[in-house]
Amino acid sequence: KLLKEGFSLISSSLSQIGKIFVDTKFEFGYVKDNEGNEKLIYMDEVGTPDSSRIWEKKEYLEEGKVMERSKEYFRQMLLEHFKDEGDVLVNKDRMDERNVLAQENELPVDIFMKLSQVYQNLAYEITGEKITLSDNPRKEIIEILKSQYDLIV
Image 1: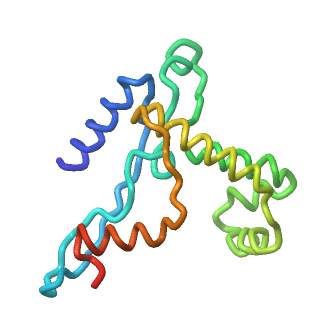
Image 2: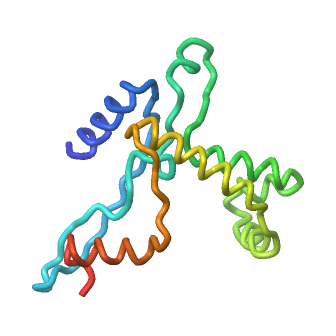
């Protein structure tokens, strides 16, 4: 019930700004609180381009065209960049080769910057605010987990 309500809430919110919330993943895990009690927590983001497929509603409904606003954009850039190794990137039986491909090839920075721009643009459309990039995101995350959730001692 909670998952359906969460999906419905995100879907409804995105629909209001012209997006279709196609699917997402929910990841849960257990942690121990300061008293040693296990708690079930949601472990990852949800409803973002990283965990979800989000399409442009107008293009889909009027033209039948899928315009992704998700990490699928990055997948397609990878397939374009590694044209000759496309099967390695999509065939789960070739994970060893995929790992070698990743270790032996450096992606151009512009690929990451384009993906970052896709994510930032969608965040702006959703919130109406530009994202301020952190100078030290690791430190900020640790501080939030420590001060707001008592997950780090």
